[in-house]
Amino acid sequence: MKVGFFSPLPPARTGVADYSAALLGALRHRGDVKTGRVNSAVNLYQIGNNRFHREAYRCAIARPGVVTLHDALLHHLFLDTANADEYIKEFVYNYGEWSRNLAWELWRDCDRSGVDPRYFRYAMLRRIAEVSRAIIVHNPRAATIVKEHVPTARVVEIPHLFHPPGFPFETEIVRLRERLGISTRTFLFAVFGYLRESKRLPVVMRAFEKVRAAGIDAALLIAGEFVSFDLECVMRPLFSLPNVYRVGHVPEREFWLHAASVDACVNLRYPSAGETSGIGVRLMGLAKPVIVTAGEECSRIPENACIRVEPGPGETEELAQYMACLAQAPLLAREIGRQAAAHIQENHSLDAVADQYWDVLLSCRD
Image (cartoon, rainbow, N blue to C red; front, side, top):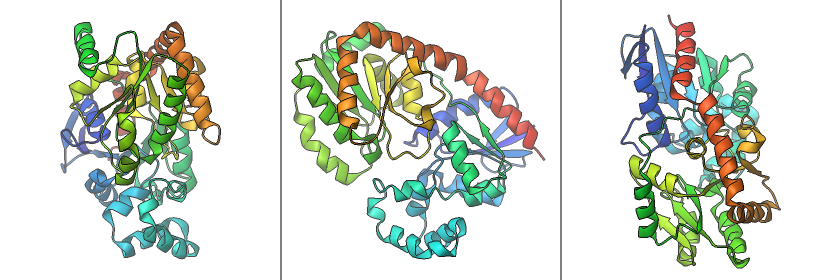
């Protein structure tokens, strides 16, 4: 069977590109898979919620096939790639004529799209869910959002894949922490990925300050590039606080080295786009305890394999308590990481994920 594969690929600076590169290699062991427009039996499209995925989205509408929604939300894709008339027309197509004035308000206020819950409430999935032969998602919440737009859509849940490179040597980890100035005795928390409002960085910083004020030997690494100028302006002065370390975008191997060097990951996401975090899956696969925002998106993760923080007024205090607990009980942290790695190994391996993809593709071919 010949499959057409549409996705951004490295060196594009998007997690979907790295995901797609690993998946593409695995699928090529199962059949004839070509990137771009080919005379195929079925096309597979990898689509996320930003301009990197504009071409894949357009092709998926023009020639329907199987679509992986890495975010159960395409609102920001349309904000990034459409003009006002196109955006309003698409919004009305999704939600009806009653929504025209709302669409205009959202277009007008789009500089708030990273924090305003309305932009996450209206996912704008109707068109792609109507035409696609199947929609692949990574968690139950994403499946629900697709069905809310098109109840008859065929939705298949496949776990987010985990495919690490060769693990860094212990000496490299020691050298990295030495270069950063972080003792091996200091408990190192980290936030990874593209830094936007939904990563809850001000909350993380306030919680970390509570941990430090309690006299706990801990450090915080903020790793990644900002995609919000306003957030960067708010956060920049805080990076000079004691035991806070900052690195920007790093190449793939350097990411894995930094990930292997930390003791725990803080991976909050609110408002949610219905996504499964590739960062979270990677860190859990490395046997790191990961603190996540509670929600249906992470409902497949066993209770003993991650730490869940409820969004809302008590978020900062709850996060601070969990961070302090991990830093003061490293054996507990390692046990949570061990449970996380076992879950990822059992459910998210590249071969198992590729097998599930291939079954869906076979069922959707011409």
